[in-house]
Image 1 (cartoon, rainbow, N blue to C red):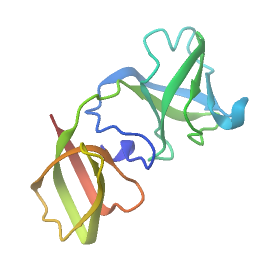
Image 2 (image 1 turned 120 degrees about the horizontal axis):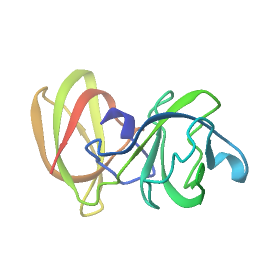
Image 3 (image 1 turned 45 degrees about the vertical axis):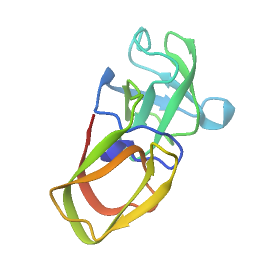
Length: 154
């Protein structure tokens, strides 16, 4: 789930791919919020507005699809910093909160989350291999440190 950490998008998706990883390029028009696939003929025929696009090369960097412009062009909610030749993936967006399993914890680990009730909290003194007893809709990139192998449990 580390590729889906976001300070702006609520999603604790379980890697439900809408599309397999593809090579694309972004930044054409609208301040970098447009993604144009350069390889596939019909790359966006199985995506929908609201799905998540992740720049796999420079993660975490995620946005939602706001418009399907054409068969090979989509508009995003924010710039994911993709350039030609970088890999991106499209996921179905999760719609419900999840409990989190924290697999690996390093020194001075912190986990910043938004709860289903809308509260933003920072958890510290985490124990490796435990479940966080909260319903979470977002795991923040900023404020989360030295935590990996996070799994969302629905």
